[in-house]
Amino acid sequence: MTTRKLTSMGILAAALLGGAGCSEYKYFDIHVTFDPSTYDISTTQEVRDCRVTVSGPASSVFTLPEGNCPNRHTTADGSDPLDAGTFEFSSFATSGTMMFKVETFSGLGLKPECKSGEGTASVPVSGMSMIPGLVVIKRTVTPTPCQNVTPPMDASFDL
Image 1 (tube, rainbow, N blue to C red):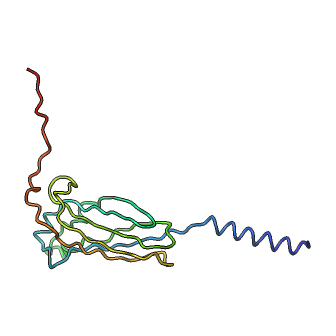
Image 2: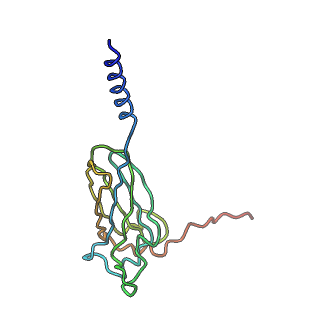
Image 3: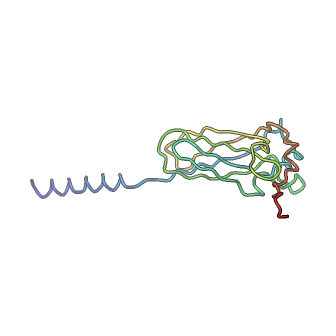
């Protein structure tokens, strides 16, 4: 082979190897709101925690920071209490559909009996590096018994 052909093949091989080793993050910007037909300013204040479950080509479970979900602001300071803001999730996924589920909990802990609402979004992975999505949380139940849940006490003692 000539030197020119070897150089061309070397450049092609380096490009293929270099391209195969590089992965690009996809950033999912997920906007979270409370459905105004099931939530109002007082019922959003009952929400204590919001848990996000991500499934699909990537998976994760995490809790949104307090102050974002629920939104502790009021209309007096110009913010919308039904808007929990946007969180970002990053992944190396190149295809498929990411599923985002946001669950709200009232009372102490992320217990099933304390769950008060849920919203989901299916977000297709695309060629864009920033991919938007929207989760609208609908109130599912009024967790009245959960409002005053206290941790179990140890009733054992020595006589």
